Structures are given as structure tokens and as C-alpha cells.
Length: 334
Image 1 (cartoon, rainbow, N blue to C red):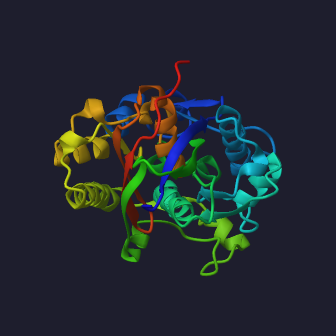
Image 2: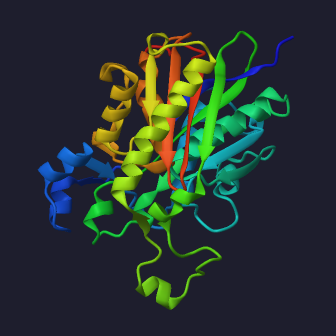
């Protein structure tokens, strides 16, 4: 018997109700709606404002919805992996908080830090637990409360990010559906362009690090922009060539929603028509690890069993990658 693939058998997303529009940002920093839309494609983003709520709150909403949607009991879950850079605490892992919230007493969980590539890295990790036979039901969630680490006086970054979460259920499949291949990359030389300066062991939190604004996300846009286009284009091409496929064999490209110009440039580099590229950046902005599963959630009713999807992302550090999926189900009509 061939090794089982890890198939996505359900997808769920959740975003806060509170909307932060470009018009709202005009009142906060020196910017305007047209400037933001022209350079990023973003019109609005969601912000979690519920008192006491953090990333685990959004991830819990996703897991609760996913369990209900797939008729899965909490105690059936073997593993939860969360991709995030805005964990509730340095420890314990947010995944364990979420498992506790839903009563998943038979599962273990952990977080993966790979910035905007977090969902991809977590998805491929979860797939290995399925393929090895160690787990039967694995949930992978990308969730980030970026509003907690954004400087809303910095117009270069505050226009980009929003809060949200999305996730999938992975189960074994022996019919050829599921995750087919992956290409994941990392390059620490890119850390200087996209990082958080303080909060880790290199620069532990002090009064001075807080005063100096070192606990906000820091980005140098131009080198990140160039690296993202090259990185995502190259790993997609690698995965397609390795599987003897062309862009004509791909039904959907599901890219990390970082910047509309990046998405357009990647599509152009690979000759993918934009109508086959999932895009929702205009509504949610960059939700970091949540962007890809939020796209899958919104496009779920358009996906058919047997469709080929290419997921791709690029994140701080640098991290980047691509995953090829043969979709395992046709969603029931809503």
C-alpha cells in the first residue's frame, strides 16, 4: 500500500467584526485612501478589539467552527499546529490554550514561527504526522493579531496589517488526493529587513526597549518586495517542474496576501491569469499566517474534488515556500 497523503477535509475562517478602513487611517497617520490602494491593493482590514481577547480567541473560533462543520468531536483531534508570530504568551504555546478551550483532551499541540509562511510550514509539518501514521486527525491553523505589534504612527506598516485566523482539518487519504509536494526555504540573511527588534533573548523587554518602539514589526519594504516576488515564483516553478506540471495544470494559485503588486508580479512571472489567483487582500489586508487559509475558506464553494492548487508564501526571516495540493472534496452547496 502506498503512503497515505494528508488531505484537507474541511476549512474554516474567522475575522473580527471591527473594520479599520483606509479612511480611518487617514485620521491617524499622513496617508490617504488612494495612496494605500494604489501601492497595496488594501481597502480595509479587521481589528480584534474584544477586551481580553488575543490570538487564541480567534484560533478557538476557527477550531470550533471547523469541528462543527466537519462533524468532528474535540476528543478525536490528535494534533493542533498553529502558525503565528503573535502568540498569546512567550509560553505556553497558543495551540495548547486553544485545545483547552475546546476540550480536546486527547491532543497535543505546538506553535510554528515562520512569519507569513507560518501556515505553509505548519501545514507541511502536519502532513508528515498524517503520512507517518502517527496521527489521524490534525488541525492546522494560521492566526495572527497583528494589531498587537503594529505601530499605528508608522504609515509604512500600519496600512498593511489586519487580524484574522483560518484553518484546515487534515486526514489520511489513499486515493491520491491531498498534499502532493512541498518546497520550503529559509534564509536568515533577510532578517535585517523584516523582524521585531526586541522581546527575544537578544533584546529582552525593558523599559528602554518599549520606549524606543522596539516591540513593533519592522520592515524595509523594497528589499522585501523584491525577495518575495523572486522567492514565491521560484518555489512554485520548482514544485511544478518536479511534478512534471505546467501552469495549465493548476486550477488555483493561493498566495500569501502581502501586497497586490507582489501578487500581480508573481502571476506575471509564471504566466498565471489573475482570475485563477485567489485574492482577498482588499478586505483583510495582510493577516500574516492567516491569509492563505482565509482564502481557502472564502473560495471553498468554488473548489472541486481533483482540483490542483498551489499555495505559496513569503515571510520575515526570510522564510518562503510552496505546496502542491490535489483537492479532496467538493463542498456541499450552502
